[in-house]
Amino acid sequence: MLSDTSLPIIKATLPVVGENIHEIARRFYDHMFKGRPELLDGLFNRGNQADGHQQQALAGSIAAFATNLVDNPDNLPDHLLNRVAHKHVSLGLRPNQYAIVHENLMWAIVDVLGDAVTPEVVAAWDEVYWLMANMLINKERGLYSAVDLNPDEIWRTWEVVERREETAEVVTFVVKRTDPRPTKQSLPGQYVSLKMLMKDGVHQLRQYSLTAADDGDHRQFAVKRVQGIQGAPDGEMSNLLHDTVKVGDRVQLSAPFGDVVLNYSNRPLVLASAGIGITPMAGMLSHTVKSDTDRKIQLLHADGEPGTFALRRQVEDSLAQLNEGKLDAWFEHPDGTMAENEHSGYMNIDDVQLPEDAEYYLCGPLAFMKLVRSALIARGIPAKDIQYEVFGPDLWLADFQ
Ligand code: HEM
Image (cartoon, rainbow, N blue to C red; front, side):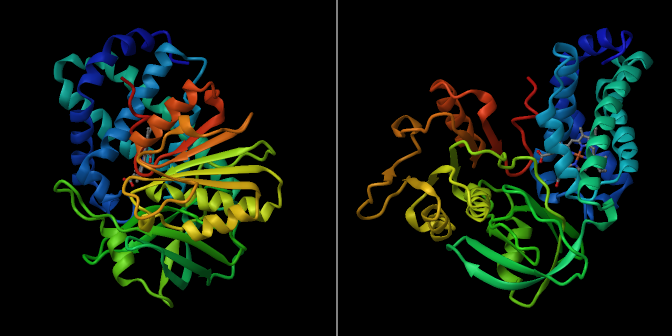
């Protein structure tokens, strides 16, 4: 895929770009937001900028893509491209914005690496950038066209018709369509972006998994209050939603997107989640009930304590309506007597009897998913049967080293 001219140059410069990727990412974003401050109003998540995760994700993903072009050019990272494309369209990204990122990223590479960046090196990285950008632009065009919307049309106004406190930290919002245009049904596991005006007059966007199959007029999602730990700031969007949004308020939601969705199949299904990672699982279970399948379903869930297990009643109701629907729960701090399907400590897959030929979906903190995925692979589950959803920028994908 890379031209014969660029291939050796990328091979030779990947180590130095990799070593300096954090600094390149930092300067790229600083420079871009100085020149285009409007990108922080209604597009980029300033919480992710504050902790540097988005910076690593974007720049890291380009380095990961370049590594792939060098090492495995016939097998491009489809998972990475799909994830990014879905995230981008849920934000209403437009193709002409790629030139902004290009200009600022190339500026940062030259700024950090200095004299090492000859015109040939610039041309080679330019080629990598546009190979990736054009693939994303094409995928994004396909996603917009699948929902029959252009980037300016993905937002709709919805009215909050129900607010349910699930646990001390998690609240469910049910919203009703106010816009007469018909909406697309979501697929099991998808999310929507929510756009809100912050107290200082700046718009912010966040993604929330849909926790129920929609009926065309309603959507349902759950929000965990993000409390900053180790000096990190509290989540401004989740706190605003928890503290101020009530029944009768109006909110802006994007059309549903997200590439980690249930396959159309009759194979047994095993869902493994931790904490707020229960949300896409609740959506998948609700869709499965609605589809009236006889698929066998097993939910494995880990949480701090029984009282922090959000959406428990909803997922248990769904499981009760499914073929051999079964829950096993692990609690770090169990309280009182434990039911037969409750266990203390961290989730331990080795104790679980798994169905033959199942498909697996994981959602929770990265460390949790890495452990569960490794345990599944060790038990002989083929990698192709394990999908996972990461909340926040996916640093697993960007970890090209
Ligand atoms: C998110 C890569 C172009 C705006 C992301 C993520 C990656 C990425 C890896 C994180 C996905 C995740 O795991 O959640 C890229 C690459 C690009 C590119 C490789 C070019 C080749 C752009 C452009 C814009 C943009 C042109 C807009 C000017 C965003 C925003 C997010 C995002 C707003 C969400 C992150 C947040 O909320 O802070 N992109 N991107 N990206 N990207 Fe891009």
